[in-house]
Length: 166
Image 1 (tube, helix red, strand yellow):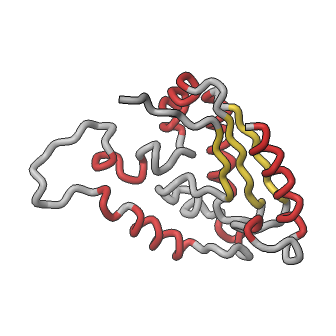
Image 2 (cartoon, helix red, strand yellow):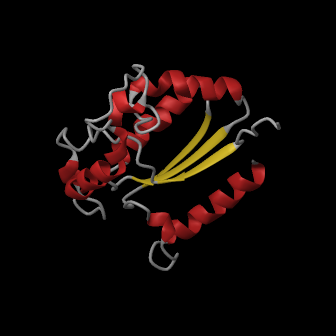
């Protein structure tokens, strides 16, 4: 059986990095009032995304402390911006020493605080991370045409450079 080929790079556009929703409960939401996202949308989305991570009442199984059924939104795969994700990120860095990550986000998007925390966690874990936060841009700004957001056009050049170097 062939061994699993590990990825060498990851490109993230405005990633959602904390499904515990801790940054929206901390009073930061007003400064992101112009974003496309809002706390209600994120609450519903988190509930839908995590719906099957809780054992059914009929399940008479026990799960290890690190299992998604046990940790829910606090699991490192669901919330890599949390400090508790550092051990798994360190494992990634150790197993893939040349792995690199490029994160693109906007400073006016609701996910900005957790994206900053995730970039910091990656760096602290030893993962090669490049993070670009575009001033005054909202969630997913790089997905719109350049005539809507000139920053989106500029970012495509950076993405091309990153992918060609990977």
